[in-house]
Length: 84
Image (cartoon, rainbow, N blue to C red; front, side, top):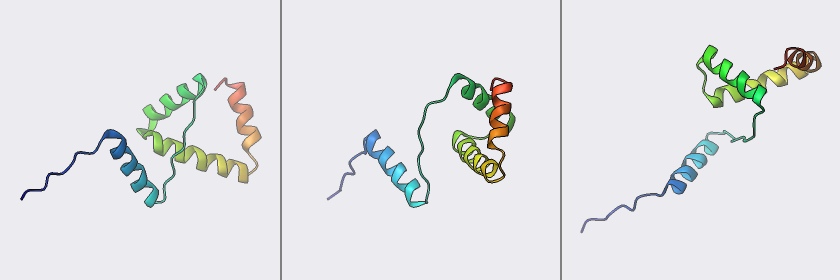
């Protein structure tokens, strides 16, 4: 007798992918970007060739470092001044 494998649906494949990433200690983060943030994202992509996950991870780590060094207000002021 031959056992037939049942094909997974897209939703099942996505859940399996998310579960695998979670087992690796990764966490999915979702959000919506402003127009300014989208422009920055596109520029970062072009300059670095990073994927969205790498950009987001680095952005969070850099924001954390800026906060620890007391630079968040200064960096935010630069973003406002430069309309970014």
